[in-house]
Image (cartoon, rainbow, N blue to C red; front, side, top):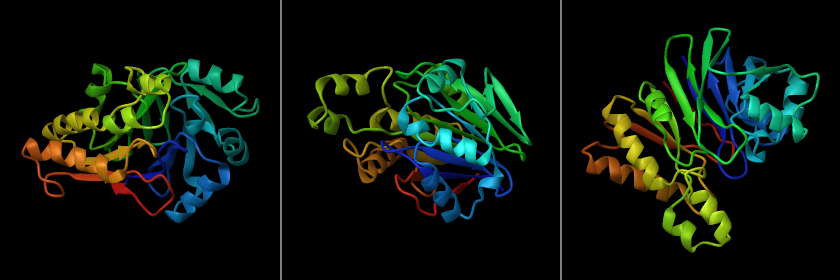
Length: 262
């Protein structure tokens, strides 16, 4: 059975495993190599089951381990053209690593990974929708300033969705960040707020996506409790009961045993 394992999520690094115990992919590699290997082991997974790393964009919290991890485990790297160029310019990939441009979709073993463009302040960011060997679909959509129709359409047909719930707007506005950084995060090419995330989750449950996870929470401008409470309250207002009509988890920032089967 396919599952999603949030190895790391948040400001200090992002990395997800999607697949079965025998076959899967990593979405991003935003911690160091040893930390990712340890998190995989903690969740009963072997690096031998990883077929490739799909990178969403070149920001350090999504690619910190990429150079060492892909060289050590001989993993190919998939990304958009703009992201591949940005990774090379930042010395995040080595010449001997197999580089794969993903325009629309890529087939890897019995899995299919589809690219969805995202609005973020990066070279050519995207997120990924994964179709597992048994025909199930999951999607990780983080680092998005707003939900485009392309993203919304891709989300609507998934059994499981990880959606960004980055910040509480009031915490961000009154917090320690500079005005310029606050403006960037709140922009249409920044990060999705708790309120914006909650509104999208409500529509997803209405259309049949019942396995949900909140991702990329800010450690400064959010807490797991606030993010969860915001989404549950919005879903309750729409008449949907937590743990009865849907499941909702928070992707952890530190490694722990946590996965969702879909």
